[in-house]
Image (cartoon, rainbow, N blue to C red):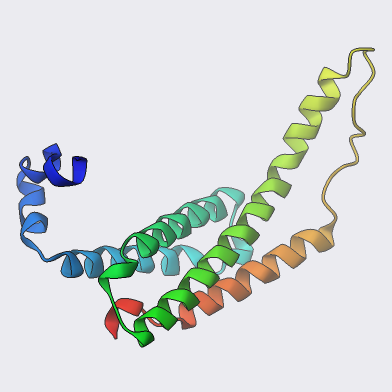
Length: 159
């Protein structure tokens, strides 16, 4: 119902131009905008802060959902192949970045659990549960590979 008659369909000058565009044109603009953001935010992800990588993960998720939403707008074998390549890379990027975020937040969670203790008053976990360095390195490598595959995947809406 919101798509058909929501307030966006009648209100606001800023939406007027978008309302007049064919869906394929609107989709191309939105997908290109989101793709550009992911490419920009993903540059040199190895040296980014936890917050920067988290922001990249959110951008990748938005692009992935938009890609899935507009999938039927662009038909054809070439478009399908490009879209699947892009989606696979985005999924792998999200997974690796999610793992890195889990590692980054683990110390806070472990500290909270240790300080809380169990019913006997004893700590419920050992504080040495920090992620091994090789796990972080593996996830960083996976994220970089997925980002490279994403960059190499051609925009499916340009076939």
